[in-house]
Image (cartoon, rainbow, N blue to C red):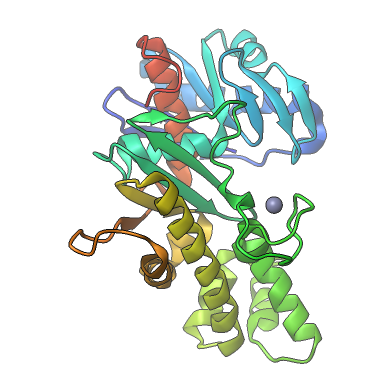
Length: 316
Ligand SMILES: [Zn+2]
């Protein structure tokens, strides 16, 4: 979990990263979140008295109106009244939304999407999540499920996704998918520097740093696997642009933050080939996240700010 303290001009005054420890259960994790917020308040010293509220993003389906996490499979939560409980622990009003929705709001309000009226944000990590801003407002959809871009079909009968379905973008282009492809290729006898880099860095997973080091060393298998993922992401971006015609698409997540244009340029090339757009117009802007791993927390703070300021919930 990432916690940030934001001032009214959107500047990050302090931040803190902490492991979530889902094994603690809903109450234990909520207390852990409260602990992270209290640590930040301590760091702020006298300024902490001016803190008006707390915003939080949870990984899963949420009801922003009631502040309840309806379903968070990675945490194994169902119907947890996170906002109410956290508010009791902290004595401050708490606003809840989905974590990647927060990321989209953060990039729109204070990141690389500033000034865009319509924006799509895509975050590539162990999974692929996203958020949609339409007419300057976060779009939740009918059941709160809008922005699940990781489960848009890219390939009929493609590889299995974490959701149990086949051919989703997440099953093709997340870091988990790239790691699966790497393990399969190495198991089948192809050579790569990745296992040696993972051993040297003491990593059990193919992290963004492992990927970056393999690319810097010119590992052909890593390049090939990354290219396939970038192609899938290009198709995903094109589908989203064809549906929503946004001013820009922001791409974030650990791997995008680390590789920057090395990651984005091939995605732009593929996307441009599949976007239907008048030829005299500039191609849609596909931008790297500016807030990096603060995006979700900053966006949650912006949503809390908007609610306290009396802006319609979901405005950004
Ligand atoms: Zn899926």
